[in-house]
Amino acid sequence: MEIKKSEIKRWAAMGPRAAFGMGILKLYEEEPDFFVMSADLGSSSGLARFYSKYPESFVNVGIAEQNLIGVAAGLAKDGTPVFATSFAPFISMRAGEQIRMNMGYMHLNIKAVGLGSGLAMNTLGASHFGLEDIAVMRTIPGMTILCPSDGLQIVKCIEASKHYNGPVYIRLSGGSDIIYDDNFNYEIGKSIILKRGNKVALVGAGSVVSQALKAADMLEKQGISCTVVDMHTLKPLDEDTLNSLIEYELIVTIEEHTIIGGLGSAVAEYYACGGKRPRQVMIGINDFYPHPGSYEYLLNECGLTPEKITERVMEVYVGK
Image 1 (tube, one colour):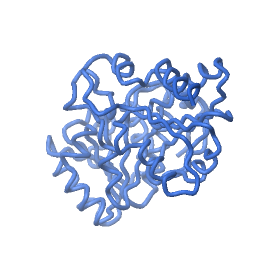
Image 2: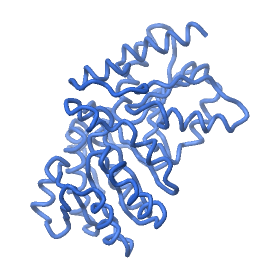
Image 3: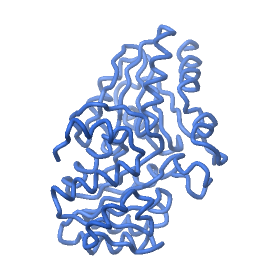
Image 4: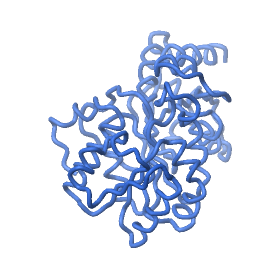
């Protein structure tokens, strides 16, 4: 998909769902060989322009996530890519059995898109928070899990997923900070090093990557040199990059997800099976459901602001 210089900043600054909708529209106009589906969230998915312009390629099953995946499986049976969208907790758990069978066991070419994951649905509370979706999806054999960090990467993630033959879970978390303001290479399974240091490695996924970058700048002022890694693919992990971080004094995983079963767990599992196990700290949402509030309030409550990340790293690193 051709990305013009004039489009990059606009996409990078968009919110996740708007960027998703624009990316789907642009991709379809260049490669009209896939379907898009919604569980009654077409406009909320950023897809209003798409279904208005191309209704023949859009299917709305209503508030029925199990049917969403079942119908997507029928459309994908001949190999046609299908993007099926709903809010993250509903598509990952309410349709869990259908995902297990149709995406896992049958390995159909469905791209399940978890909207508003992490803390993005900030005022709607625990029923809409996407805190457990990575943990659930990681257990599905053959599932690829992607968590783009800003608008431009969302567009690239959509294109890469469409060309990837197999089931994919795309996790769209909160925030709209710009991380990539210029074109870059995106490859499933290959992380991106945004900043290089030599003492602490901050490994993030999704919109909290921007918080990691800000924390790295704060830590630099304290004399702690940090590498920042955008681990946009959570399954399969980029083992080459993880191997390159083994000699760091501390590895810090940062995620807008429960610390149980997410990025931190995946990284720890990888190192646990190797010969050398670097010291690791997991920063994410502890074993509780946060109270509803503004997105900034929730990041602070869960220790995911640059200040809280810096404080936690200093606490562990200086006291090592």
